[in-house]
Amino acid sequence: MDRYAGFLEEVADDTRQQERHYQLLSALQSLVKELPSSFQQRLSYTTLSDLALALLDGTVFEIVPGVLEIQHLIEKSLYNQRLRLQNEHRVLRQALRQKHQEAQQACRPHNLPVLQVAQQRELEAVEHRIHEEQRAMDRKIVLELDRKVADQQSTLEKAGVAGFYVTTNPQELMLQMNLLELIRKLQQRGCQAGKASLGLGGRWPLPAAQYDQEGSPVPP
Image (cartoon, rainbow, N blue to C red):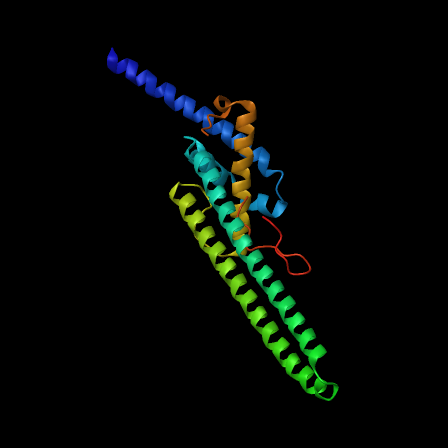
């Protein structure tokens, strides 16, 4: 009798899992229609079904917010580092400009052309230094974000999320960003409709910091 009851419970569990899988898959198919057609074609029924399976126990819904929060903190830290560097360069330029003005005011007229040539060389050297420091900072930002993207890809791949593996291919990265967006929207839908309805538990990283026309970083 106990064996029969256990069997019935297993059947009931399987049925509930199938129902939850169907609900998640249906929701994913609906959300995919909001994506550009080029990505809709790449998200086959099999891929969406595998993604729905990975989402069943709710673990991925708990992983994704943490992954994105870490990404946000890193982006904010890198942004602040670049902002500090820009402020240092601004102070350096102001100090140099003031130094040059004071030197010209104290200079005798017949020595002024020689002084101006020397000051121009000094200005060019400082601008070269600033340019190189900015390039080094930008390279650091890109490398750090690339490392974080790889960490995120590896984490989600280990969690069994379809479509995720370590890659730097721009098209694959965009596809993974769209998959993350689907998961995020599913999570929002689950919270709005009630976690029980979808059986749920609980932005991809920008490829690099964005800058305005003057070269200043835009806050993440």
